[in-house]
Length: 254
Length: 276
Image 1 (cartoon, chains in turn brown, orange):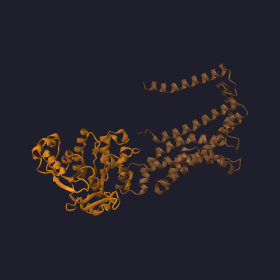
Image 2 (tube, chains in turn purple, green):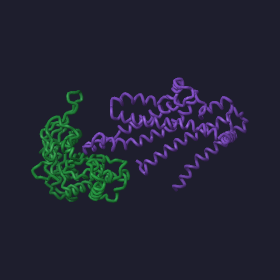
Image 3 (tube, chains in turn yellow, green):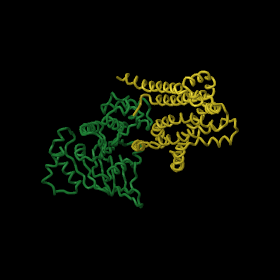
Image 4 (cartoon, helix red, strand yellow):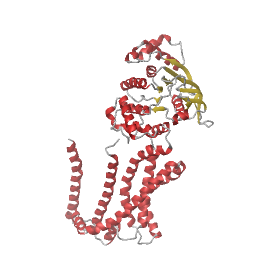
């Protein structure tokens, strides 16, 4: 029964995807849609296979921007969340700001950052990714460090534990699932931010800029091929974040 | 450990606790409480919600400072007793750490005492045996039932072999059958380890069944209304729950809680029976 369920779980979206692509292909052929209006999946695949090296190169550029920003943002986010959990007044100052920034598309700031740096610099994009990731990680990890069971803290105090012991043995372990939740959100967000940042000018080497330039040249199928590359990159980031999470859990769950 | 007969396990002298003193939401939680508990004694604190019984327990644990009065544990100040881990504590929620195995949960107080790994593992095994969970050491808390989790919490509270155990409604979230089983287990464990217990509860039969003395407290500000001795002998069993003395004690506690004494004598026999 269980394996049957698993087959069902995989088969259903797979069948849906195939049917969807079939309808798409059929619509393009049947209604004779022009390639600049909507490219057929077969044409997109053709472009994708023809341009794999270029797509790979562009993915490497966008991907490394996303990865660098993700790492730096995570490190700073964790560091700041420790400070916030230690100093209440700081938390009251920063938390509302961080939460509201999480709710708005701050990556548009990259347009301003582009003006601050040279046009050939990757720094504005990486900085933008860092900023987006930073706030996601900060809000979540700070929550994990502070929202601990009051009984567990009382217990630790009854053992005459120091604040540092409480941090190490209660707050940090409690925050780890929160960190991975944050990463699951931050990983795709870092990729999206890296792409979208490229729409605001600067170097023309990433997936985002390739998509815009192909659209500008009416190479619709090629643009779609880069979109496919972008999807795969985003998926890769997300998958890695899930694998990391499952590794730390090791059979634990609630 | 320090079971010298003439040192009280707990001594509370003139303790009062006022929260938010001087502000609009001032709460007078406890008023002039005096209580002496002998080593090896089992004492329950009972009273209506908000009567300060948990506050009194936390004063003894030095998790709160009294506004007035002196509290000593084992002949030391309560603060020193806390630093020396002279007591273990258990709450209504087991409060186990999800990311630690059952054994590692029990080892936690020992880790904080700086015991080495081998010594900790040996003690954890010993405690698991005491609470009859020897096969569950490598499991995680969420794999255990509520009653089993509470037994782990008791094992953890007793891991360092403290002379005193402080319990705040530890069986409050358990079903009636598990609860009665746990009461029996607690008495067995305390007798085996000759631990002094201060036990906060809402349940009159539970207080009577477990205790040598039941401390009845008044609504806020909490004061001790009466201390009722329970003369049911040191060996308690399921038969105890059907004994006349058991019902008599339940009646006395209930009357003390109501603040009435001889008024309801006629009806108490029937009421006692309801309580089984």
